[in-house]
Image (tube, rainbow, N blue to C red; front, side, top):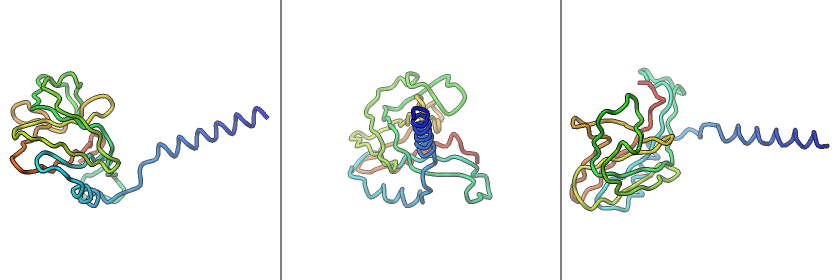
Length: 167
C-alpha cells in the first residue's frame, strides 16, 4: 500500500512538472500589443509590452522555428543610467546601475506595463531576468536602455527579451 501511494505521488508530481514546464500557447503578438495599447491610462510617460522571443528568426523564418509570447516580469524605471566597463553579454548586475531607481511595477499576464512620468527627459528601463537586468542596447554615451519622454505624449516601448533568439 505504501509503495503504491509513493508511486502515485511521484506520478502526480511528474505530471505537474511537465505541465508547468510547457511553453505557453502560441499567441498573435501583434494582437496582444494592440490590446495592451488600449489599456494605457496615462497622458505622459512610457507604456508597452514585455515580450519573450526564443528560437531561429533567421530569414526565411520557418513557421514553428521560434516562439514569441508576452511575459509578466518586474520592470524598473531609472533616471538615465550610464554603465561603464560592462561585461560582455545581455545581462548586467543591478548594483552596477548607479542612477536613481524611480519606480518599479510588474507587467500583467499579457506583458503590459506603464509608467506615468511627469518630467520630460531621458530615462532608462530594465527588466529583471534571472536576478539580473536585461541589457537590450546602449546609446553612444554609455546609456543603457535609454528613452526620451516628451511633453504630453506616451512613448510605446515594447521590451523584447530575445537572449535565446538568433537573427
